[in-house]
Length: 75
Image (tube, rainbow, N blue to C red; front, side):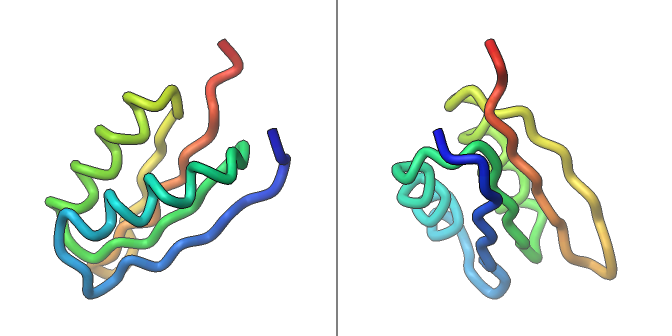
């Protein structure tokens, strides 16, 4: 597993596009991903998908956008 942060920008995209984007990105098996989304539905769906893949997700809201940081669980 690579130890870099892969950054993704999903602003302006509606579901399921952000989920498809993170799913494709996770094929590279990075330890950490960071994604910016601009709507609550995408935030929830990407969070749920990442958690099902074994990632811990933290969300920071800033100026109407959400920065999701997904880190692979050590378990």
